[in-house]
Length: 287
Length: 257
Image (cartoon, rainbow over all chains, first blue to last red; front, side, top):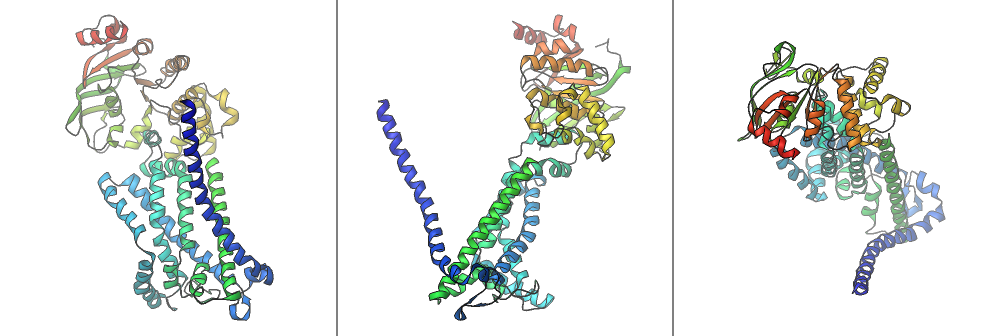
């Protein structure tokens, strides 16, 4: 009987292992495929030309990706500058300062934001935000600023819902202890609740950042997509993801390989950002 | 109750009732708490003793739907007056909880937390208060070399002492203790009780406890709560040896027998 049971266990274990491996193998296949397609051309023309070259003329064997790298980093940073304060403030309000009924109504509404297709965000940006920027700040409107604002809004649901979970996970006994010492609600949030929730908050910011750097459609629609280093926040910009999406349909030969090289760089950047953010989270938490 | 002279009373509670929505958790409680004594509040679970304790520093305000009637007079003023400064009230009437709840900060930051929230930032002053508070709860020798360590790494007993030190640091007059030993083992409990004895010289202590031996051991006065009502209040000796109310006697003998 016992042996039979353990045999059944082993079978289940094995099949679960296979399922888990299949998920991982998809990731592995994607990685291998991108690198296999992208690395040879990087080797041929030199990593330096890809990373630091400023000219992207794929038909003339000029594959400088610096404008796109800067573009991706700029709009991601811009999205974080807009999305993180707004998102954390919303999460703090919904968990600590609003009553149950209001937050019970608002939280699902915010989560609904995550379900809106990115093309809709892009469309709204194109219809309202871009003309607004053009009229009030100058430039073509299609810009770093427009992309940052749209992305900042798009990452809000991610940041808010993870931050809410992180703040709710802080035991009430901390809040009680603080209030009972004569602290105000805000002091309690600032000095106890947020530090206690820090690792969860950073996790939310990392996921938001991942969403911002990976977003393509909405960015294509509002960023202007010029493959030049942006001179200001009002200048158009092209991101790494846009570069791939815009040109893959007609690219062939080395041009196509250069787009895979773009993917390789995107991949590495995301890995580095994740690693740094994790490191920061752990360090801060220990302190 | 006649032997309690009102001159030494620090808190006077006058027909205090608390409602949670429709439910009446406290029914017109009337009592006087003596300064620099330990008052124990006993009674079965759900009898209102913890609710009562939390009316004294208005922690019940945090509960949605809680409503209070009557008066709690502390230092000549009803703390339920609208103009009461709640932050100052809670500085003067501190609270220690059932489960030790140090913040996830360093030992140092825990003890000076109250000072900081009350606007104190002078490092020298904070260190002085830290020293005296930890000294008062007999933790200084143990912890003086690792004040920057995470408070959550301490033992349960050390954590509870730290929480008491945290309260002492802001200079309270009254310390409310809500079953402070229920998460501790018997030897740690005995040491915390010793500590209460030391603290009684300077502070008024009101302790809610499930443990009747504890009430008998440490307290000067005892109140027995049942179903939201203060059934009997008087000197601990008298309550435990010759209770006047049959319900008190039932409870005390039932638990002992």
